[in-house]
Length: 250
Image (tube, rainbow, N blue to C red; front, top):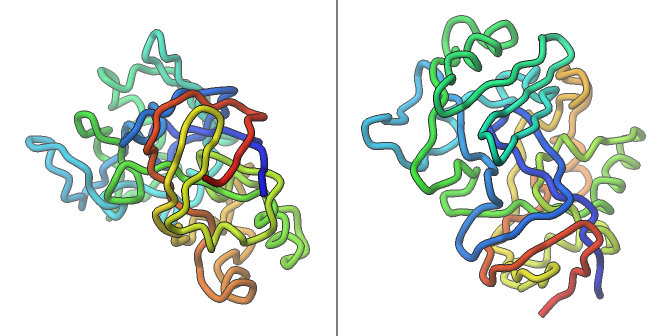
């Protein structure tokens, strides 16, 4: 069976905004370029700025604890290095994440915890994306699975709840759960499917409002028996991918 690549998304700052792309070049052993390049450390984070490296998501501000973050959209300018963030309850913010991280901390403060887990610093690790996996991954999602879950819940589920990188069309609902260990050619790149993506409370928040409005986790348990949605892939052959590209198994 073959399908098509329907959407490409990156999230320059982990949990703080999404951006759709028309195309991107994937590199072997790397995450999607500029995806989760930065993260927001909270006051209880064990991230060490003196020896920066990948750290689990519990060390960073995330929508599972701060649902309003889900309503942030992002636009990253690859040439200037500036990011513009928008949120329905905040003024737009354009800043340089390399030199003006405090501006982001101040901007996000009104929708963030004020005591424990308050955001304190914008951080990054040299040459390593802050993916949810301990290895550089690309998150792959199936549009049919999202539609099936929405039908089960009797509502239109936005794909933005799942914060995926590559959204595929033309496959059967939930068949991606059986792709572990298989290889997919997407456009000019090849990815090996490594594992399912375990989901958290962030997916319960509406990406337009940042308000918790449905129980996606219970719905997943009732539908597929686990709180997983989507899979993590690893790029094994570099190449360009673009919306509309053919997706096929090798």
